[in-house]
Image (tube, rainbow, N blue to C red; front, side):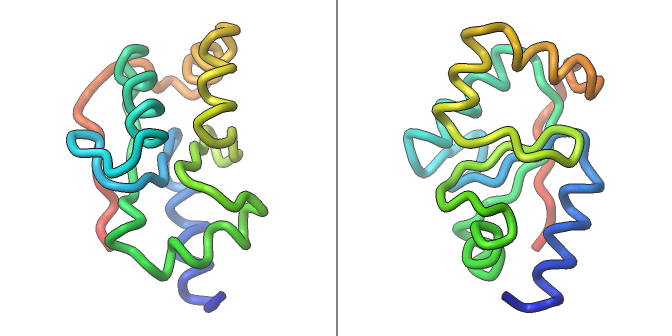
Length: 117
């Protein structure tokens, strides 16, 4: 875990109300779990940023250690790790995800924005 990569991750998380670390892009997810989370965020008209970890191997290697969460995708809302696909799906079913997104003022769908490597 390099200090530079760790600082970049912390900056990305702090700089976006909603941030999704995923495999692929929202228009072309590269795994089913990422696709499911993208679908839920789109259904809720969520404005969010994303990082394609397949194009950022340093982040892919470092983020699980930093977050103490071994898998992807990882969804962050207001600087806090919400969880991966299963947790996002459950929060959505319970109506809690929408409440978290409303608190983050993220329900105003625009195209997801990519965070440059």
